[in-house]
Length: 494
Ligand code: ADP
Image (cartoon, rainbow, N blue to C red; front, top):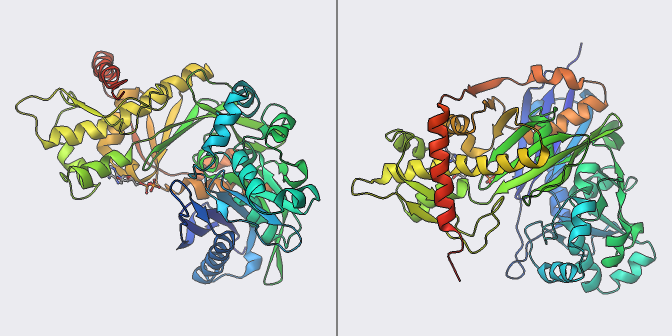
């Protein structure tokens, strides 16, 4: 029988990628193109929506060439994308009326302050699961409508469409026929009621956004429409935002399964099952995915400074030449490192939320050397992850079952072993750490009947399972010291 493939499109913040996955869940070809980041003013970040589209389509063509297959071998397309980034376009001309405003863009901070002043904080939390922040799409839509001439009038006439990047790509791939998104992306707009699964009228009204411009919201594993490639109709059958796709790609299908992506920062998500769990610790409640007529929820938390702390060792202190080298030097120091580094370079995030905290190094003695600092900095990634996971378990009322890891710093064995030890949980690193892409591929493959969800775990080869080894005394002693250090970094600047 001829081999079948799923094509996964991964539209990220700095690059567009296309990946072909075969029936066994193996990646057979990858093509990637970086694109320009546009910084029109301090705190502003934009992308050109057409450049996003062009790079996505050219990597799509390239990956087919690399694999040397014909379009009819591709049975489904999955899309995963940078979340929250906002595009508004004219549905007649197909042209965006403004550049895409990227999730990192802070220009709408004042609009957020205004929403806070109008007392909408609780409403936002209870309906959308989010905190009022410029990250999310809602205030970006408002900004474009207010600042582009005639935009408001055109929106009222029904001539404009809004979409997160998945919607923009979907609309273009379906030849302007399908204007839709999936639950996971909708839940990042700060306009979507994650309980009732519909757009929230109070927030639409508060921000003067016409419902006519919003996409239809569908399950993540769903036949959204078709892309015609060289005369062959290929179903677009899966869509999810990047972090949710990674949770799916890590096969975190059960309540209590969690994944952590160790990049510049850490992104932690825990599957909390079919009911939304709201956080008391400032974590976000979000939709993980919709599949088989059911919606699954997740709690999400992040660590601001993770891999960035390793970059600080390299570029700031200049005591390592590469991030990988950190493992070599840290090996010379035992786990009971007397030194603790708290990399609160820009304050403390979840669950402490102290923007006045600053980084600090504790426990210095005459024999402290660079190895201690390097080890302590690596350990800080694991301690911060534990802080967030404790909050998640408390909020969800679910114990952590397993932690699946990916991202650049998950390659560090010493860090992963310490993570397992300090959590007292098995840490599982898959062989394929392309979890985001795999999530999109899985969602599409399930929809077109190539795979069953419950058989996907056999695709996932585990690289290493890090088994916790610490005694409870050792673990508690170390973590207590970390918490003591955290207390002393709080409220540092006036
Ligand atoms: P991002 O997607 O945020 O750019 P990546 O997943 O590419 O991040 O991971 C890069 C980050 O991981 C960098 O901050 C780097 O310092 C860190 N990193 C990469 N390899 C290692 C390693 N072996 N040990 C520790 N940190 C690492």
